[in-house]
Image (cartoon, rainbow, N blue to C red; front, side):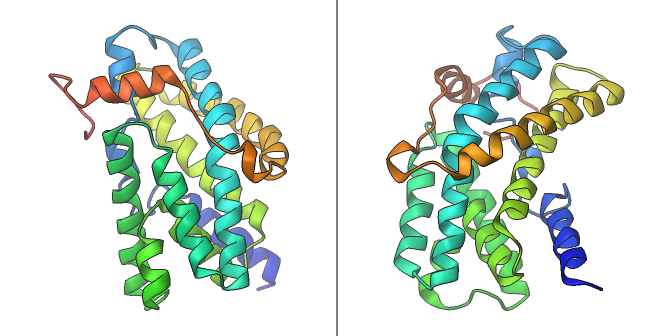
Length: 225
């Protein structure tokens, strides 16, 4: 098997919904947004996710993932920990921070099962966020950073769309249409995201933060808080 082919397979593995990080148990505020009537059909769901791609994924997650990867490549354990902490600090609610920690810890346990990333300075930092563990594993597998970023982005998008199927709701045909349309948005946003300087990083969507905070005390929930 050629190296590019193996990279593509690794990319599919990291993008897969079977990656054991528990992402399917969280809605990232969508459940409250649906109850409040902010998201009530395919069009409003598409806009909800479009804004998250541009304002959060492209201005925060992807650039931080890139810096985490670079820290792995240069052996800079302090930078690796610092960028993981920066990403966690930018999660605006207790619910979003708890989700990020849970995803990171789950991925770190998977690395433990493979006896990877066991040096103490790296292991503790790898458990901070999902992006931290994925950056370390992408570097270990020698995946190109852009392929790693797309795997991370598509995995997040697929989880969001599957939450929409349950909550909005819409059918599988609509879900695949949304995945196709929003995947094109992912591809368009990637290059600009990876070109941002350190002082340009940060995400903030007030409605998502409000929805997540309200979801913490929502009376009936399908998704974790």
